[in-house]
Amino acid sequence: MRVALGCDHGGFELKQEIMKHLEERNIEYKDYGCHSTQSTDYPIYAKKVAHGILDGECDLGILVCGTGIGISITANKIKGIRAAVCTDCFTAEATRLHNDANILALGGRVVGPGLALKIVDTFLDTPFSNEERHIRRIAQIETE
Ligand code: RB5
Image 1 (cartoon, helix red, strand yellow):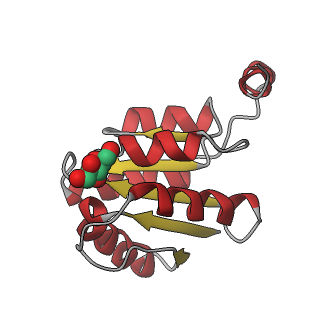
Image 2 (tube, rainbow, N blue to C red; image 1 turned 135 degrees about the horizontal axis):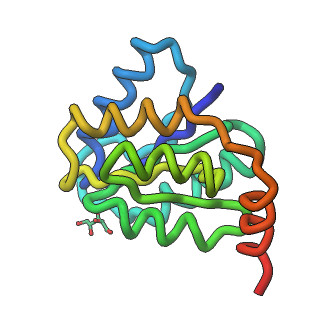
Image 3 (cartoon, helix red, strand yellow; image 1 turned 90 degrees about the vertical axis):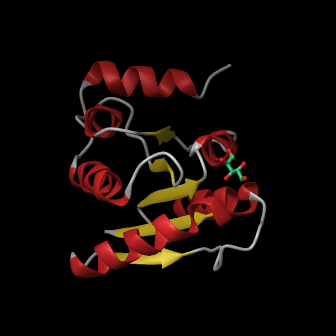
């Protein structure tokens, strides 16, 4: 599995923790930026990560901004992306099982690194359920 990572300045420090954690777990990743705590615009990185997944460079993505909200709203505008903001492991598991979410969004100013890494593990380690009702509902997301 290859994970696409992106953040703005509000998520930079947590993204560093996530990169270290993925290295310890021998999980490959691609870092799409940003690369410092200097103020920047979260849509830039949401779009880079979303296209990294849609282009097949990566399988799943993790986006981090201050709240996880702006960066997930942006990613969810892109067809084929299902980004879920999670602040607990229950929703991280459910969004993989039920929504086949392909991006986890985290708030660097919301969750501490200990919880965030548990959420990351839950998200990455949970496969989609492949149940008919969930496949049907996900297909409906894409229609107007
Ligand atoms: C940046 O200050 C902040 O607005 C951003 O990281 C994010 O929380 C937006 O939703």
